Image (tube, rainbow over all chains, first blue to last red; front, side, top):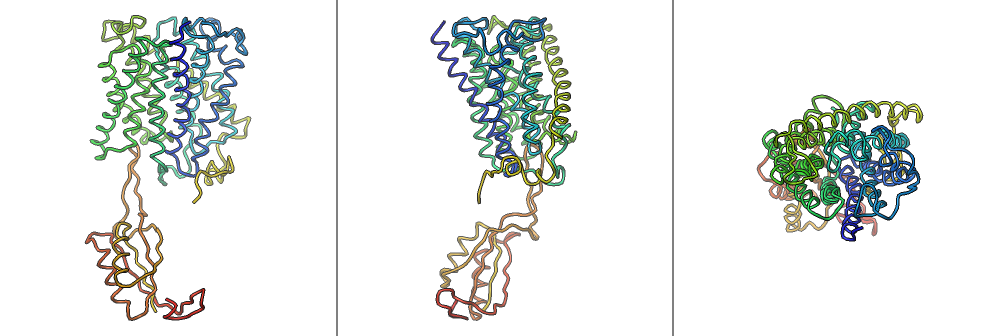
Length: 405
Length: 112
């Protein structure tokens, strides 16, 4: 056990925890004021639900001893055998701390999906959805990549969760947005963000927390954590600039929402690559991600699905690009525990990354569809009643309002 | 007695208020309103989605004056609110039957 690593990971874990309230503010500012609390609630409630799932059986299914590469077994239920000594995933920090760090990732992933279903999903249905989705989608994919599952054995690189978290939540968001249907008034009324400063504050908290997310994924306070920390910063900065540049060209105005959306795109794209690429590669990845995600968000308006807060365009597309970019830019010159990518003489790694991403997409799409069907049946429909949707989530679902005038 | 109702651009309020104050007007009621006339609205862009905003913020000033003062007041407001650009606003002049001061129950001109 190493006290330096332990101290670092306790802090990194706290920083990842703060990302979920940060996401709540990010999303909260983007919706209309009648939905601000309901939208914040979508993130906050994940802190409750997933924490309990994690202890009961979640950690065990994700990180317990492997069953044919697909899922962990139930031997760690109730965290039975998860000790305060170093464990199988962490040689220098307590097993329980690794468990806590991973819990924060499991919390924010379903919360990310909530951006796609914003302003129109019934709270009871949402609650059941995140419970089932965490169980049947997040835990298996997490196991495949990080718990010694088949993607890990195949050599797929996902430093801090590009596939497990962003591709996964991004495609689930697409399925959910389509199944839920468009918000009332889509295409006719304007859905103005009601508080962009709140969104920008949320983005700032996310960016800050992301250092815990990416650097912490090294699990020790050393070279790899430092590399991941640095690549996270420069990729994100590059993505801010590229989103703004493209926006300026296409729409003649650079926007603050564009700046923070670019930041998110950069953070997402660098996540799988953070500890495997050089700072210069990180800038290329971030710069590309800003422009690609901007294009993906524009495409949404043409394709006609109502992914309200652009989870697909930013997390889905950004995550997919990041996973593939990891297969291009990874280099053992910066991290020997990683691999070389396409541009460093190993096209095979690109293929592995594509297989990993493809598997996560296929699995998440099918399971999310089934889960929403089941949730709809059990709760009498996933969508709000029309009248409730008009009134807003805050009053209709929670009997409170965000602002009194 | 007349009521002067002026709809002006929000940034012109301070100038109009001090111009009226210089004319000896010590009371007025204002409200933040939204609307459009020839100026139309403006467009806003959020993540590539462009919205036309038809109703844009304006300030409505309501002022009650004795009939003799109407022309000078209206001209005072017009000059102060005029930026020479489209959307500077409009001034309406309406007749008023009577006024009652709540505290003293005075009526008519002396209640203004």
